[in-house]
Length: 300
Image 1 (tube, rainbow, N blue to C red):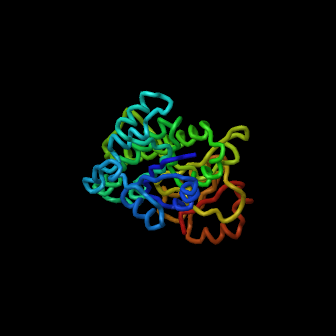
Image 2: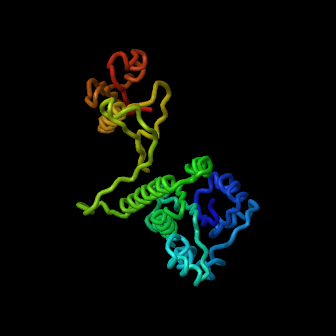
Image 3: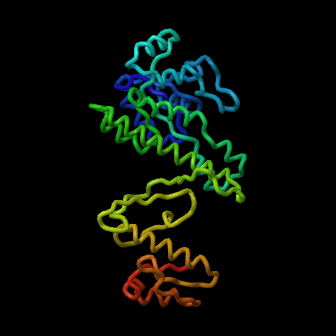
């Protein structure tokens, strides 16, 4: 099983429960800063990365893991004698498990922090470690999100190359979404016609089907406020077409300051009402049976 892990996380959810059985199996841990302190407080034996590299954390923590000894351990191809020889010459042990998640840039963006505050939430060392480990997934298992902890523990017996590749793919998707949001945050209102376009979204749920029953679909959320933050009070899970209807209805009511309700069916407005007491009348009349679609108001 895994012999040596590099652990550096902002989100410590489930970390202790994840690492404890692996340490019981003989896992050694390298860690940084606050993560190392947290693990030591929970009775783990931890080697600080600064002790491992012989170089302190500097620039207020901006530089911790950007060191050849760390990345030699991550990128060595353990099936090549020449790579093994280089590790031995420099007394660098290989790292075969990376448990890293990123600075909470999305949260800072959602809270509309100032640009200097946002810049300090741009992770550099984390993405570098994740990218190196994911590239070398033939020899390194990379876990980029606490949601994967239970899955890794459930599958650790009989671990396969296919499972490592799956986690590597998840890692590159995570990095792409992270960088995409940073790019968006740094754009000014006058910036147009960027050479590359991208999308940053996190899966909310897998939908029953897409626009047609034979198509698969997923619902992804961005850090912006949207219908993904709404609470479903009753009924079955929403479909792709339901979400389109909701989105169209919201866009319509947002065009008005006056109290208004709109009904949408198959992504087309099929009814609208404006007035001060429409909400009471709408609720009394059972809008679903009246309109056969979705009713949205701009009133709380």
